[in-house]
Amino acid sequence: MCFRQNILGFDFNFISYSDVFEMILRWRNTGHARLISMVNPYSILLGHRDRHMAAAIYASSLVLPDGVGIVLASRILYGSRRSRTTGPALMLELCGKPGLRHYFYGGSPTTVQRLAANLQRRCPGLDICGWYAPPFRPLTEQEDNDVIARINAVRPDVVWVGLGAPKQEKWMLAHQTKLRTTAMIGVGAAFDFHAGVKKWAPCWMRRCGLEWLYRFFQEPARMARRNVDNVIFLYKVLMCRYAKFTANVVSENTSLRMEHSSIVPDDDNLILSNAPEQPEIIYSEPIPQEV
Image 1: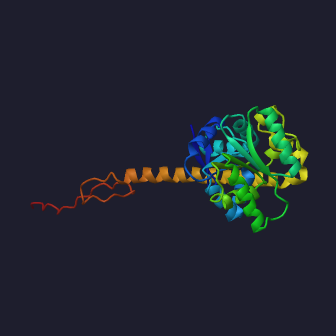
Image 2: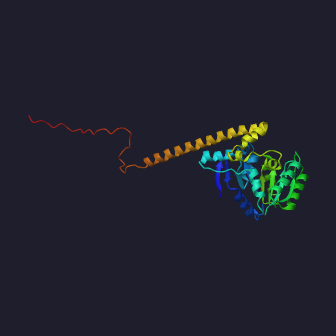
Image 3: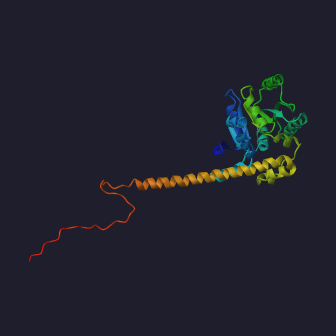
């Protein structure tokens, strides 16, 4: 079951990992690649600042809540209890399912090779049809065409993209009509976690929604900006909740006022007034007295 909620201008799909797998299977015969974006508070604020990032999120068939901040926003705005769907966990879930062919794009040559080896050890029967580690510079047109031909030659079901936001989202959008694949999924740090280059937060911290704190202590300089954006994100969510509450109060008051004003007597000669009713005064001619 998929629940859809709009959070600061972007529609999120709250969906289970197994349902993501089922949707990819249904997309196989559609004839074009689908985008799956893993979006956290940092990604939302990037979308507010960068129209190309926003376009990539809007073009995604699934926008998944990759961050405890999104779950908290859902609770504040809609009063609902939802679970997040993280990139590293989704990678393990889909690699553990039979019947999918996987391609990995991103990371360094060492990282992507270790990623493929570790996943094959962890997920017996995993079908990896290729990987490519792009250089840390923009590709030339010829290099990009070679990469496209390379991926299309093996026809993967899923292309995992690990370039980090917003680069990976923009890359997926630019290649959506060029690649013969079922789905492209931008997962960022999942490459480093499953390759063993960086430590993934312990299970108990992930369950408690404290993965951001673990990453902050690992990379304080890099994560500092994101934590500032988390505060800005929460402020915007609270302002949105306040505006929504105020709009509901105004709407209820307006409805109540219209309801009462519609009760008007049929007598056209009666004037409605807030002034207190005055007693009726009757004037008459004095009766003459007999002498």
